[in-house]
Image (cartoon, rainbow over all chains, first blue to last red; front, top):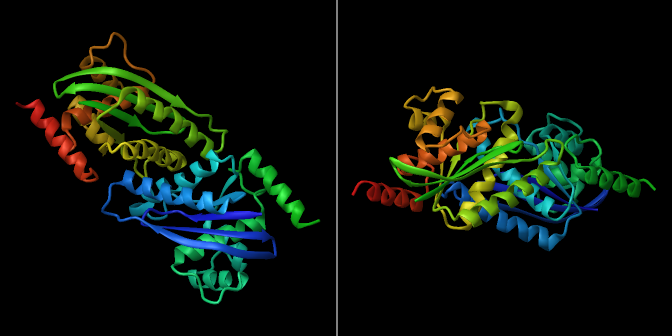
Length: 179
Length: 179
């Protein structure tokens, strides 16, 4: 299974693609899309959407994982971050792909074993899990990788917002991983 | 000038088109797009986008007004509401149209004279301003009309998030209104 993970944002949006089965995962691609905060929101969203479409068309993921944003996390930037989550959700829906949202705590717990791990620990574990020569930078890129790994490991079966298609996809992936 | 106003939401999204100049405005169309809360967020967004595109293509607005959503207004629904704001912003950006966000207080003050007016007062004033035979229902439809009227009356010049294009558009509209 190939998973596209998104750490949403308009100033910086981390996008990563990993593939494999739980316990055996490799990085396919990672990157960050940036848009200037001085541009109008609509233009920033359209630019992010154009780049996101390129990622979907190029890497053809079978599932999408997006970080769940909370309203009370950072009032100043939460509006644009929540708007940014729309872009991968739309791209997935247009392609009939299951999209799942994972909380930061779920992602941290999945890759480090602790839901309260800091950014350095997440980056270190992502680097180790994917056997990378250098740690992924910036943090948004590492977070997108961690999200995709988390999704691959957890399957989609635990997320309440998962589509029925997503649930089935997750079950099949889990079965494939545990023959 | 023809303005498309959007009261964003995924469960109910109010969309309205008005045209005219400040002091002389008529309703072109009003409606509400609904998506079931049981559907996955991506599918709801895609459905809303399809309907929104139809509105833009059919009524060819020259400017777009969207209600500004605040993170602390209602935590339970704020996530999907903020995601819904993305749809008209994207549609406007793709067409090179200026998109402006107005706060509920600005809208209420603009159509009733008081920023603390209740929904009944807003609906009553919208009905009177547009010389409608019956009040627009549901409240989301009335709110979308109020937004579009507010935008037409204020011009786009007072909104900080307005694009440069939007600003110029607003000034031209104001000049046209005060010959």
